[in-house]
Image 1 (cartoon, rainbow, N blue to C red):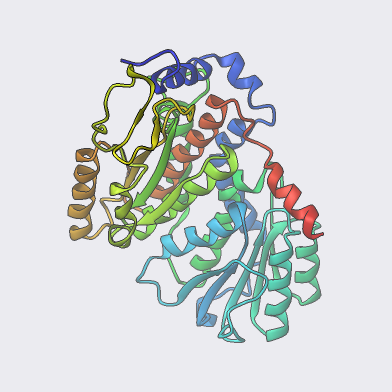
Image 2: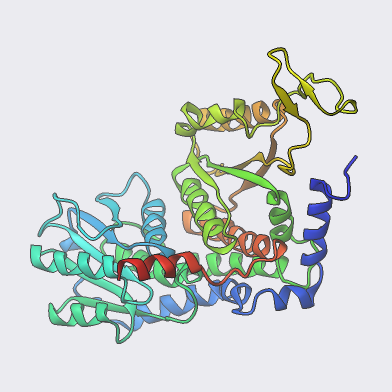
Length: 403
């Protein structure tokens, strides 16, 4: 039975908050939900912008040895992961990311460096772009119009693709990702086509309709997923490289939007180490066989004569929540069996499990629908917790300390 102050009461209060449209709107003053709803428009706008840009320098006969995406934080780094996931392991060139101030030592004139920054002013990206030009790499820049990144591109006569700068970088993932996909397609590294972009946009619109703020939590998948997470510590595992991108996006958005901790992993690797937490302090175990507190007043003595406090005021405990992100179209058969096994193992240990799955054939279509749901859930979790999803004050405080 749930007490008034127990976890059940916390979930009920969170559900009440999410089912009050006025409260949802008031709790999202910067319009993060609206920004997520713009994802389909981001895809279509980016495709149109790329069609209008001068990409003549990108040709299949000039295919690079590797494509290195230099981007840090927000949607920039994830955009590089989206590119790698869509290209897949069968890509004819290496597709990798670089998240710091310096490029890997092996990157040189035979490689393409794509510098990505929604604002066009991220210091790490600017440093990487400058270094790429100095090393003689083929450079393409994707960022805000009129930004320092565009000026660097113009100075070295590199290709520049502008992106809409409205909204937070973490909510403009697709405006940053689509130009990378177009670049890879022009180089003959992957095949997508306008129909696939439209399929991805349509999938996002469908999720946005289901997750609209006026839809109640029991039929709204974004709100329901947020309520699953209330009061838990999420362990998020993907079952393929593509689902792994979604898992890392999930954890990142939980950190930034809901200010919530999470751990991401990819099967089968996660089953070799992270599964150990199933037997740790955050996993619900059997009830301790202690005497009833009322038999001894507020305390009792253990066998060593030390006092045990039965009411230490610590409040309700936090338990693991396993989030399994399945990708049936791409996961290895053995990983599919492993995914089922770890879900059953978690449930046997009292750990609740949420199961999500990709849908569709093309990797872009599958990733788009899953990420759209994840983004909604993280904002709804913030609102359910009474947290403004827009600002990340700790980031600004950190920047001031190193300015």
